[in-house]
Length: 85
Image (cartoon, rainbow, N blue to C red):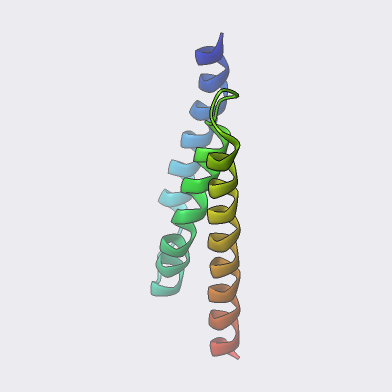
């Protein structure tokens, strides 16, 4: 049942990701934003795949990593926006 639930999530997710990557005109700024957002995606995946028997300290490490990576992403977007203007 768990595998079926994961399939209902992952199949549309990867389909939409492939469509998005195909129809996007890639520039240096877009690639840099993609690279900076990869740690956020990693920590989000780690948080969603954590199980109830794992320690709370592990979850707090992942949440801290996600927080730091989202802050870095916001700072990078702010820098790109200010460089444009």
